Amino acid sequence: MNQKYIIKFEQGTLEQSYKLSELDLSGGGVNEIFQIIDDAFISSVIGRFKLMRTDFAQAYNRQQY
Image (cartoon, rainbow, N blue to C red; front, side, top):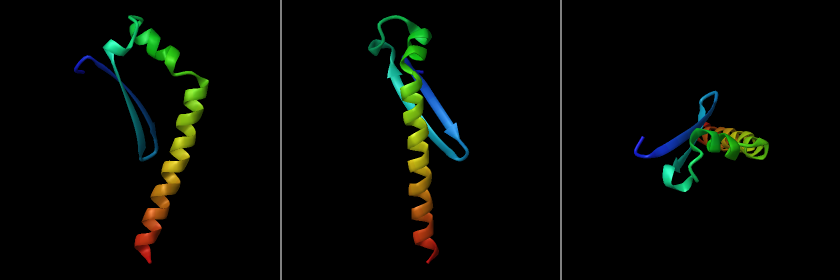
């Protein structure tokens, strides 16, 4: 898509997307992307989902009162 790879993570109703330009990669293509998505990155994504869920719940609750 426009010389970009899109990496998407979904958890329930939440979604995180990351876009990488083909020019930012050293030529390894999809295999290089899988190297970038390591255990530390996945842990960070999971933590961010928890923060996103908390942020949304707090915003929702502010509107209920």
